[in-house]
Amino acid sequence: MACFSFLKTMMFVFNGVIFLGGVAVLSIGIWVKVDGGSFVKILGAAAPHLMQLINVGYLCIAVGTFLLLVGFMGCWGAMKESKCLLLMFFGIVLILFIAEVAGAVVVLAFSSVADIFVDHLKSWALKTLKQDYGKQDDITAIWNTTMKELQCCGFNNYTDFDNSYFYQAHKNYPPFCCPESQECQGAAIDPSKQGCLRQFEVFLSSKGKIVGGVSLGIGVLELAAMAVALILYCQIGTNV
Image (cartoon, rainbow, N blue to C red; front, side, top):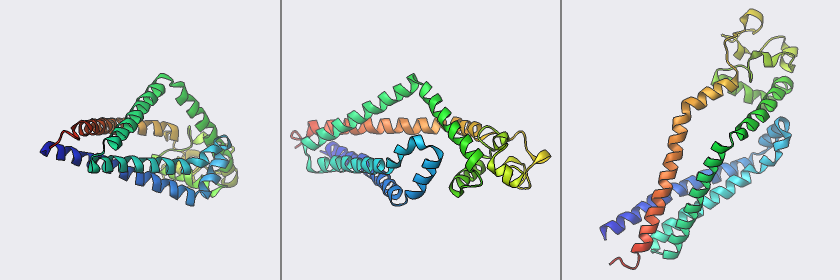
């Protein structure tokens, strides 16, 4: 009896995490839809071929609602000791786990997908640096934040600003390309300042263990939730 109660408690814990995750994703989706004008403007100017991503708000809302339902299903199934709900919960989590493993295998097997993404990113980055930086406030703010946080200059390096709108208008480079926030041109340029692509690669490399740990933790949580749901399913009706 004590073991059965412990398993029910664990189901509430697992599904409480899923439920809160659903609330977070749903909130993000609602926020994107309510204040999506800036997102659409930036995406349309940066990468028109990716305009279908304007529906990311709907995707977040759908995923958040799905997680809410799954979390509620697991909690309600454990509380009411419903074999049907527990079996449905087990099946859904199993499908998600298989999909995640399959996705990881595809990413590892087809590394060329990453190269295609980098090519698109480079095309977008160079276009915005040449044509929009210093002209469009949204794009300028994105690049300023990126260069400030990553301590970088341009996408590849400071030469990305050569013949750009910003350089032609101000006759100098952004202050992020120099050691100090001063008029940035000529000898003041810091040639050792890395481009944002390289700094982002360094950032990902340094945070790779964290990402891997989080992914592993999610997988372990899903396996544990499936195991508890299956044990409860088998114990219901035999517990006295």
